[in-house]
Image (cartoon, rainbow over all chains, first blue to last red; front, side, top):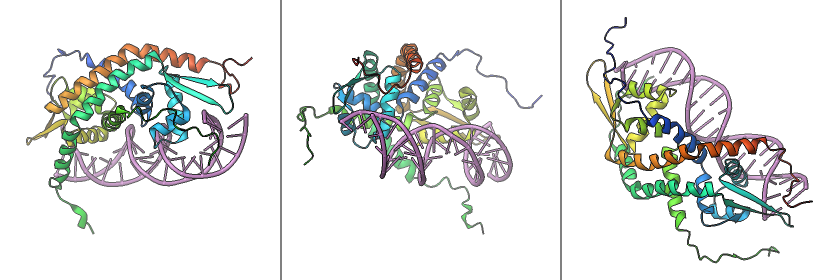
Length: 142
Length: 142
DNA sequence: CTGTATCCCCACGGATACTG
DNA sequence: CAGTATCCGTGGGGATACAG
């Protein structure tokens, strides 16, 4: 028997209902938490856009990543991809109804972000500014 | 001059108010969109936990990543870290008021996730199951 | 128990060039 | 215009060992 081991102070009184949603959240985050997905969805939130417009709207994204991002979103049923068989090719992307529902949670998150960004940056500042946790900086280790 | 280049069909009639929030969202996502932060916040949402309990609660996280995640959250003012100078050491983590406000947007996202996960998976299924990336399957073609 | 330090792999993502 | 293909650097994150 391992000594000093205390039994659970917390009986399973908390079935942790959030653990289920937590997994779901991670699912969503691995989907939308990448570098570009939210911006794509956000841009499309104002109306359909073709590839190059989307690329221009986001500014900073590479062709490759825009393609990959948009493919992923299409795969998940969040955006549609419509090819107009003209020359030159014209491909329009738009949010699906499902994609549009995503706009709301993202907006909520966005508002939180805007609202608390200052606090966060302030916190970072004071955290970084405070003396090192330096217990014993053994840099001099020869 | 490049030929065939159309000037903006869309005059700057859309100052794109979302671009501001989009950047904010990305900020938040790079903070919370990592692999573990949300789960840590979620776990702490039910009350303070010590390091090992947190580690056990999350199941799958490595010591290293839990430390890093929790440090980041602490730096951003989302959680507090309280060291009880006992032996063995006892460190408790808890959400700050700011951290608690994050719980809401995350919950919204979580509900969206739970609510639409099936649709997404279905979409993925049919996307993956459909024939080839057939480069010549133009919609109306034929 | 609560970290820190190392090594190491590989997925993400940028740059560039080529095709339909 | 809208992609695809290739190369390549960076860094996220796991495993392990060690320290206070």
